[in-house]
Structures are given as structure tokens and as C-alpha cells.
Image 1 (tube, chains in turn cyan, yellow):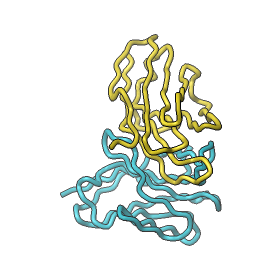
Image 2 (image 1 turned 90 degrees about the vertical axis):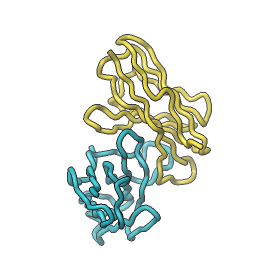
Image 3 (image 1 turned 180 degrees about the vertical axis):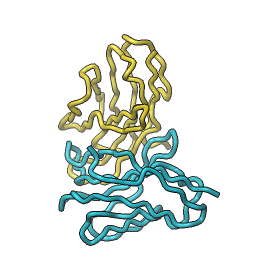
Image 4 (image 1 turned 180 degrees about the horizontal axis):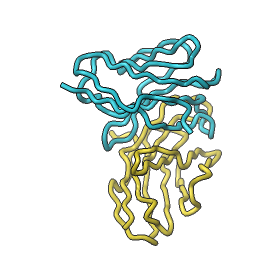
Length: 114
Length: 115
């Protein structure tokens, strides 16, 4: 079972920041927070990951609370193409074995509206 | 160039048949995976495989078997297809091996319909 809790759905206006929360209160010290998204009818796409520190890449920013029990994915300027299901996943780093396998929950369906 | 490709994209077949779905990755990755996404959109891992070990999700029926002719390919064979096998199947790959991997690359999916 997934170890994370996310809202079922969220709306965001085009051009505004989308802030997607995730609770992972049982996260272990060696587990990372990963975010993936799945645009309709496509395979999931990696967005970002983090352990303790906040992270930023060309797609998004990841803010992890100090106690690591929750995090927020931020899409700074959402576009219509960002409409997708966003998955927050807690897992160990993957070294090719069973550890670090991704366990997908229900995710948050983000709808970006014009 | 497509990083992870799957064929066919759509597959319609009758109960009891045996079918295969092919997956190829050109990323030089060591580990490949098969996932199943059912009608309720839950995405669950079925197998992870590298040149060292095959990890099977215990809930996967033994009618499903992955076969890897080489490191770049992981095909999924399904015997005696059942109605409940209807789903979208995704192949994925990651670096694995000695180097840690934080990103899995997914294929476009194969929609299997069993009638």
C-alpha cells in the first residue's frame, strides 16, 4: 500500500502556481520523496525527488518539511499541459533490486483551467 | 528517439489465448519493469528485472512471465488470458546496478482488451 496521502483533486488557474501537498508521516530516514505525473493516456513521467533539502529543477520545486512528514510540489507557472494526475511516492533509492520499487497511490488529479 | 518503446499499442484478444507484449529501451539501463494499470487507474508493479534477479510481485498470477533476450528488452508473456487481465500495461526502465537510480522511464503503454 502507498505510504502517502494526497488530495483527490485540485484546480489551478493557468499561469498561477500549483501547490500540491503530500503527507508521508511514516517516512523512514533512508526513504526519498519522489513525484511523478501521468498525463492522460501516457506513461508516468518523473518530475523531481528529494531526501531532506528543498529541490528545484526545470519542471518544479519540492519543499520538504523539516520533520519530513509532509512535502509540497510546486509548479511555478502552471499551463494547460500540466493537467495530469500527480503521484507522491516514498521509497528507498533504487539499486536495481526490490528495494526502491515505486508504489503508486491514487495521486492528485490536477486540472489547470484557462 | 523513443527511450522506452512498447509494441503493440493496442491488443484485443479472446479469453484463453496466449499473447506477448514487447518492450525495448535504448537508454543503456540495467533494470526493467512491468506495471499494470487497471480500470480504476491504480498503477501496480508486476516485475522488476535486471541481469541479477527477477523480483515478482506476489500478487501476479504465474500465467504472466517476463522474458529478457538481452539487457535492452523485457517482454511480457501472458498465457490463458482472462477478462480480468484487461488493463494498460506499462514497461519502464532505470539505471539500477551499482549506481542508484531515482528516475524510472516509462513506455507509452499497451492497452490490452480481453473479450
